[in-house]
Length: 215
Length: 43
Image 1 (cartoon, rainbow over the protein chains, first blue to last red):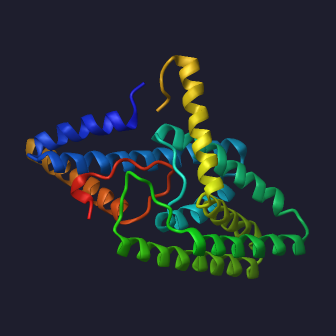
Image 2 (image 1 turned 45 degrees about the vertical axis):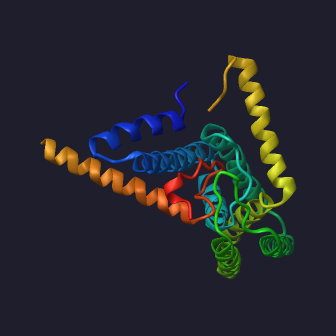
Image 3 (image 1 turned 60 degrees about the vertical axis):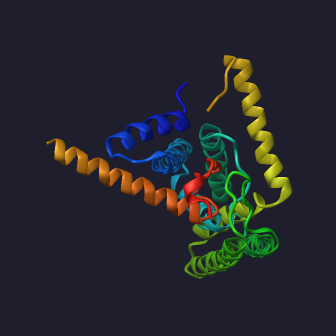
């Protein structure tokens, strides 16, 4: 099965040859294409799964809450775009479904959940962000900047959640807060380990089924 | 025709470079996968 990585590498090689780019230019093109394809395909599979489950808009709000924070805070990772997309296609529509269920809970309970989710999110971000991977080393100065940006993003998301709640849009408020909470949980060692276990499980499953690796 | 195709590929390369630089400057874009950062984008 052709992987996003292999497709990006071969496409970048051809593109670099046509545009007379050197080896580093080719690597940058391959990196950009991998990031673009894995992000777009991830969004498509999440939207597809959410539509099938009938929770498209709540899932979109969960993904936005998660995505805004993830840009600066980082978090746990899978080791291939395919497994990453599969995880997103399972987790986000499920969280979208959960927030739909939660929006039917009594008002006080919803407020309690929102307060707890936002406080926990800010606390974890303050303690852990950013969580980076070994294959993307960043200088200390940039890490400090990302830490500050993560905190600002968490506070801005909290502000948006409060505004939505005041405007009687608690369904979207719940979804946004849940997305941010899930993202902050992926900053914790337990969250990173959970994603790594999911990754390892898929690797072993695909090896058993096809005698190969699912990418 | 060849000229237009060449320009279109140039635009594509520009967009891909921009995406690469954006991802390199941030922790990650909305996904659970992080490819190896190219040497040219390391600081």
